[in-house]
Length: 393
Ligand code: NIG
Ligand code: FE
Image 1 (cartoon, rainbow, N blue to C red):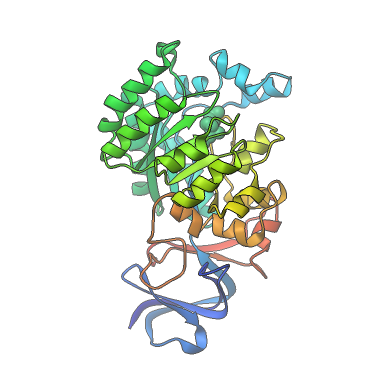
Image 2: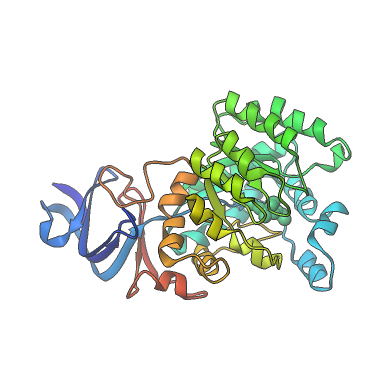
């Protein structure tokens, strides 16, 4: 006896390729998937049956890279960029990320949460069931931890799973201007230990605009000592060897990668490190350099797709739009893009219990009124999501 069965649906299970099962059924027991297959083979009855009226069911979508807890916004900076100013120059002059740091430091936990909830709801409305949320706009211990607490509270307030990531090494705070290595040491020695129990992973901005390889080894080494998995924002504004370094450090993922070199990508493939593609940032920063998808395919690197939702470089609340951009800007196939927001996104977070429709996994589902899965990538700004299931409900 199952708790609930969804039938009269087509399934994209993500078990090898899209794993399509036409006229399929999904059965749940105790919040987990108990059975998946063609309706004709359905083994038993359930307490409740849901007629999906021909909808498509995918694993609940996973946005594996967001910064959705932050104070203020950057609409004014956007206008300055439209008038000709440049992202890196604004950051060097104390704006950019640092202006969001000022607004985030000034906000208490309740107002950070208030601002974050509607952002999370917008993602959820498209079928997202797991959201990764980074800190990185506090750049001092109390404010970083406040961001992580607000992120954790999102999952208490809304039916969505949240994974938190400490990104204290996102920029050098003004109080450490000219003392980057000292700040990296503070992150490694004080903030990483303090974030234990509040952060599920640790990230760093390894980039010509931010931290170097030595800082990265220090911070991520401390994370690994604390038993936390690591991730990198890497090779975004130049090739600093993030791909190879991420592989060497056993990172779950290296994200951005516009400038990654092929040898680094091969190392990532060997290490099982996922490439998280963030086409919203490429578009919004008007970058002409795209990640080398052909080299990723040749190397066999796993590719995930995420929003990078943040006020400065990717102010988007639509993972479906990112599917479209992954296909149109980066030329991913529909299959690569859809696996990128399900099974590969789960891998980028180190989660084995979701991202596919298979017995034993969490029963997190997204239901869409579409004729074929490609429609999820094809539309630019249409939301065909008609239902969402989190742990069987
Ligand atoms: O992921 N790359 C670094 N950090 C963010 C941008 C942050 C900002 O501009 O506020 C990103 O793109
Ligand atoms: Fe980011």
